[in-house]
Length: 310
Ligand SMILES: C[S@@+](CC[C@H](N)C(=O)[O-])C[C@H]1O[C@@H](n2cnc3c(N)ncnc32)[C@H](O)[C@@H]1O
Image (tube, rainbow, N blue to C red; front, side, top):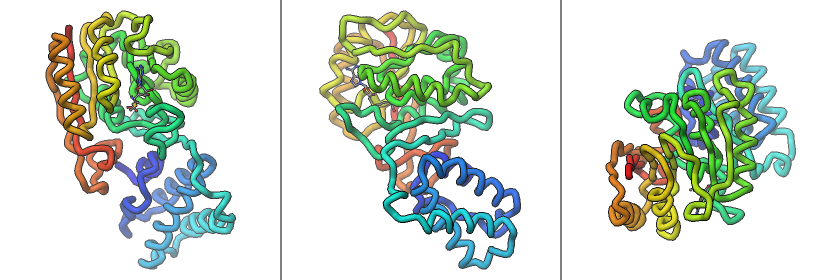
């Protein structure tokens, strides 16, 4: 992961890798300045913190004899001179997730809220990051997605579904919370200038599991971190029994063994055929950057991907 991708994903400043002397080329400074300028309107607080750490480290190593360093310093100084109140972390921010070299997805979200306004879908969860990466980059997942009709349950901020536009033949992003469905629509629009996305192939709608409405018939049903609490499992499992689909792929971050055991037990009791097709381990060291997207170990140290058929 490049430092620029880490900044766009708002990886905590304390773990950002500092550039080596050899990395501090003109091109590096140019990219750093343009990345910071692109972030500064949505989160000046983060840019100031990041620049403070980077500038301090460059100065400590006397790496400031470059024209570009002056420009970087000017940007940092302009943010430092503003009163702290103006720079405080804003509740919503626009993060950018690097899916692969060609594709990144912008998501407006509330990264500091695990739960708020009665929902857990205000920020992007770890299993969404994993499934967005695997569906786009891993050949073993491609047959479930490429040119398939896909429906996402509990889409939250919409990262996975949005990353599939163009790859799948049609994607329906759903969530039980109408406010989140509006947010998903806005997030789709945030990415509409990107030539890699074909916006004609998507729709978004409210879908409450276990409610009177059914999901549209599809090839692949997907969901990420829709298993976070035992209280929501019965309705989810009921939906997996009743909706019409060929295969369901559900990503679940393991936070609590009791919840995961309840989920697996209820799938078995409902006579659904299920298997775990991947377990991703997340390093407990937050400074490990082994995928194009950073995974936050405080969210859980492993993610299981379930393949479910009726
Ligand atoms: C933990 S969040 C995960 C969001 C997103 N998939 C992600 O990984 O970033 C769970 C999502 O499931 C949705 N949800 C919870 N219960 C639901 C239900 N009964 N019907 C439909 N959606 C539900 C929430 O609104 C929320 O967006």
